[in-house]
Length: 500
Image (cartoon, rainbow, N blue to C red):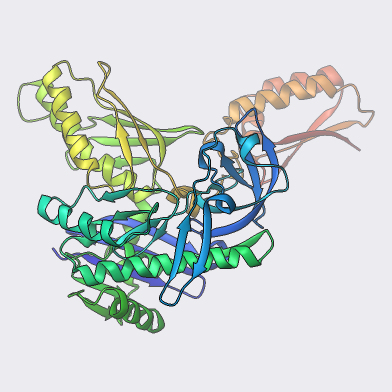
């Protein structure tokens, strides 16, 4: 099946899905009012230095100050100078001393150049770094690190040596580049052009940094559509399909300038059916919000997200296998679960600590086989991952780099009834709470009647199974108990008051 980048955009929201071999391998969403800030470069101002945490909070003109750890601090004023000669703008790097203590590197009120490494999440501000990286089409420029790296996905040793030689010959002394996967086979001219463009861009950032006062946005990352085309369009992509004329024109101009060797089509989707429906993406997004994921064999995954980690439980479900070996049935279910787990991690953009509870396997060779399958599947994930071997209990502990909120955090909000807990009190428990409250306050009221306001299900239980208990309360306090149903109240909401 063809590989397609599908773009759906409205005036306020843009959604991008990469389909590889008929399967959604990546999904991204961006709203204009909530546009992401990862990659943005700011001239910030330190507002609070915390030696005990070896970190600082930096004002970058957002609602919440960003978080900067000591390991991410770099002093540009000491280590960089920008100058122009008759040919090109160049960067000269000094010999700044290395610092480790946050209080030695940064003072409260000090201005500092930072880049957003992770989006603000929940109540946390953005994660910041002073080690800047500027992504281009073929390379990523790192002006603070003297290093050349080649993508591990470029398998040809000959091409890796060629690319390294080109980069080493053209990089400014003391700076670094990472050669991206899409660079495989590109010409020296294309690679050097990309490098020079990023070096010039960095020069512009530093020049602006010297002129303005903090907090100030020095560089803004491209919007989602351009980022997706830049980062996701590879040699194996057959088409880019968009449903907006203006976006199609922008993509055509970007591709013509930066990806002239792109051989796929850039098409405008004109059918009356919504583009994500036509490609089966909408249904996949809806399923990504469900807790349970069914496997083709009859087994299932149950995905639960906690504050600090995500737990994924693998169950056999209806799958009993066609062989007499119970162990073989478990192995087949776990192997099928591996691909689905990795797919769900990418689709839902789950990051941080992840615990996968595979079905217990008695044989060590089966555990090794499942773990190798997991390692192989994770190689197809662009996010950085690290997985430990399967324990005797069938558990895998792994981490996945998280730079933005997961799909359920972005598309959903906490339930107003349970406040995100996922459970509410049963009507029986709520009814007993009402009875105990009447026992506490029944004598306080001088009115001849008591009124109970509560959810209709709770009142129905009080009038039914607990009718005798209510009558005993009326006899005890010599008052009549009236009920008032409130449809919009939660199960554990109620009020007891006196009425005439």
